Amino acid sequence: MEPIVTKGLTKRYGELFAVRDLDLTVRAGEVYGFLGPNGAGKTTTLRMLLGLVRPTAGTVLLNGRPPGSQPSVGALIEGPAFYPYLSGRDNLRVLARHAGVAGRRVDVVLDLVDLTSRGGDRYAKYSLGMKQRLGVAAALLKDPRLLILDEPTNGLDPAGMADMRTMVRRLGAAGCTVLVSSHLLGEVQQICDRVGVIFRGRLVREGTVAELRGSADLRVVAAPLDRAAAQARELLGADAVTLADGGLNLAVGADRAGEINTSLVTAGVTVSELRTVERDLEQAFFELTGGETDVG
Amino acid sequence: MWGNVTAELVKLVKRPANWLLLAVALVLSLLFTYVIPYAGYKSGTGGPTAGRGLADVVPAQLVGNSVAGLPVFLGAIMVVLGVLAVGSEYGWETWKTVLTLGPSRLAVYTGKIVALAVAALTFVVAVFAAGAAASVLIAAVENQPTALPSLGDLAVGLGAGWLIAGMWTAFGMVLAVLLRGVALPLGLGLIWLLAVQNLLALLAAPMLDWVAQAQKGLPGPNAGSLAAALGSTPDTPGVDSLVGGGQAALVVAIYLAVFLVAGALVLRRRDIL
Image (cartoon, rainbow over all chains, first blue to last red; front, side):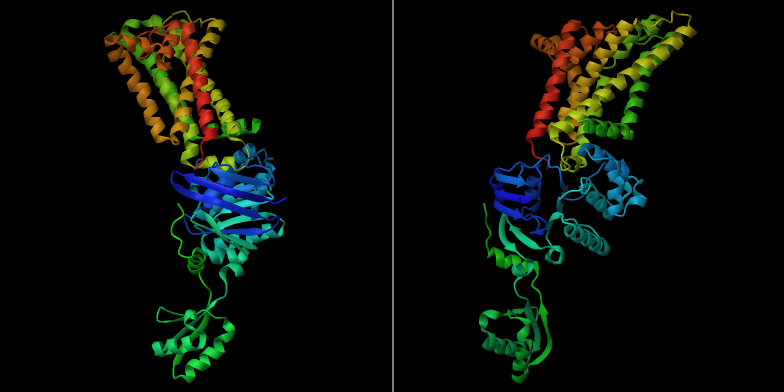
């Protein structure tokens, strides 16, 4: 049974579709990246998965059952939220009571996120990174088989982000299904098996990270630029050449770099830079959405 | 279910603000029920409560004196208690943290109701206990009879006090659910309790008969009537025997039930944002 299946999932606020006709399937044991720019509908979708927000239309099944009262689902949605007057440990103890989890599990999850030594401090005094880690600890309280993490690296420093990625990978390796949302392609490509891209409430693409990003571009900085551009168009066709930031972006694979260099030099062009550049998310989105501007 | 109740109890007990509310409730009730009337009696300088004399602060009056504050100022403190317990879950966004761990909204809300019922009873018992200590002390010093009311009378008084305190706490809870926060429900709840009710009773009711009649269906005047039926002096703000004690208790109980059910239904239906 698939851990997450949504069919025609839709949430409408008045005239605005926050999420529209979303068919999402997350397979058992995979780390699934849910990718989209801010405001694309990621968090609304995750809130519907967890039963916090009621869909306008469509269905959600988690492990074959409707959301709510799931025995083995953990989640961290839109940043950590705890009782500021309680210590980290007391926060988890209170949540363990709500979740019907034995109190001894609290120390286990505190240790998992490396907060044991600071467990007695008031939550209000925690740094952002510690708050985030406590959020993950709460999500792990029920020893979930399905973990839903919404932008888990938001606000973390580079070391914290690396720790978080390591932890997600470790959980995935241990057989836990993880759905992790992000607006950073670089982040999901390091940890995810598959990626779904959501844009303006619709799932516009689903696949592996490599499939999603397509091939990398070649970046050429050369002088004179106009002669370099003309030569490149002759060699690769006009469609593959774009002028950008005082250089050329060539939509060809790295295997043609040598050939292009020789051609440019032969034409009397001085090449000062020639390297592959991975397309960033903005480009991927631009291509995926194909100029679509309206979903309402 | 039991886990939700104990979780809510831990949240209540460990929150410093709740102990501050209890302390304020005790200080205010001792001050206005015992210290000021007794000081007025000793100095003999008059004032609105001086006429009550020593007879009003002896242990025999414990029940009436203890529930007298509940229609207005202790009631206001209970509204704050209810708003804080529910509204903070919106303010801190902790609803999502709790609910994504699996318990149903109604189970969590029921846990809150039970925990706040315990808290309301604790407030009422504390006010009775502090009042008993103060009145016995005054009676001993002034050579007045130190006998407390009968156990039956005490039980009825505690029950009625618990009912009124619970009704105001539930009023705070439902306001917090409807307005999804702390500040606005707190402000509006207190405006209703401290300003609107008094304006209706003191200004509108004497002028307009239909307001006077309508008052008999409102929570505050019924709480005041219930307190009056138990011996609270009508000098206390909000205490006035507009209706009989039995009817008042029934109306207050109906408001309690309506507030609880309305809060639960709205919480269950709405999205947690």
